[in-house]
Image 1 (cartoon, rainbow, N blue to C red):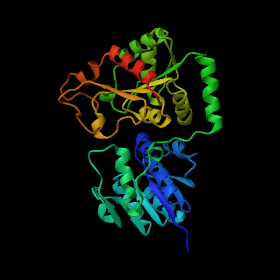
Image 2 (cartoon, rainbow, N blue to C red; image 1 turned 60 degrees about the vertical axis):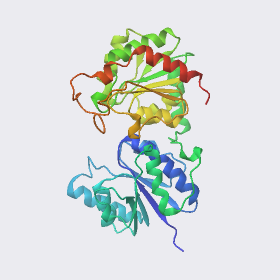
Image 3 (cartoon, rainbow, N blue to C red; image 1 turned 90 degrees about the vertical axis):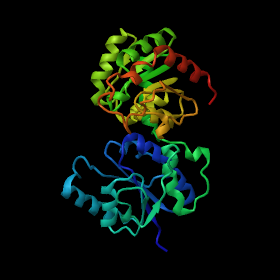
Image 4 (cartoon, rainbow, N blue to C red; image 1 turned 180 degrees about the vertical axis):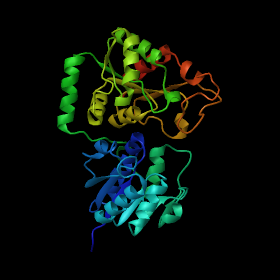
Length: 344
């Protein structure tokens, strides 16, 4: 009998990829003899490259080399060469549905609410009022898999020993023996960012509390972390844009506490299960993307206008920035103290 090869496709944002890892773990436990692969974006590949439950990783560079008609044709050829027997679309992309169908994959599973759901051979109802991790786990329904235990359902980013060693060596040189407060002031959308001056004031307060404060962010957030660093007056070490993604994940895993916006570092901190405080501005945890760490707390302002969109945006529709401006440093500092004392 031919061994099935399952391909789990998640070419969304980094946070989406992290929230899909429980689906990987659940499939592996239910189908230990099945070959299990994942297709992600180039940016997301480092998050799953070392995942012990995966047999391989494919990359869809949909915004780069694989964009357009010629790129789509390359994607289809890549899928055909992979000899996949079962494909699971973990997001509602029309491109993904078309690619899986064009590649002739016999069993194609996706959400019934996806725009191109007609191209799937099996359609799953996407639950509404649950965390997105649980929406994704709903894709297990065609496999008749029983309830997923808490350990399997927790997101995971696998890090190799060398990457963990790099993180520890960097912290020993930069932070010394102080407990690490990892501050991540970035997010893809402006209205999801707690103001830089607020992060700077928090850094000064946490430094006074005995923390070593490390600023972290992606390469395109260098200007933002530099602004926080300057306003903090020497209370931070700025590594914005200076780490690759695995090193960023490893640094967050070593933190005594992580403070972030609703962003990829928040999901990385959840996966590492470290104490974390997430500041939610334009978006809300009720949309299904809150932190999943057992020692996590959300700080937000309850406003009738929230959420103002699925992802936030470049500007406040009301022109006030209240969701960003009204969250106080004292509130976040107090939340840091609480999550540090909460049992794992």
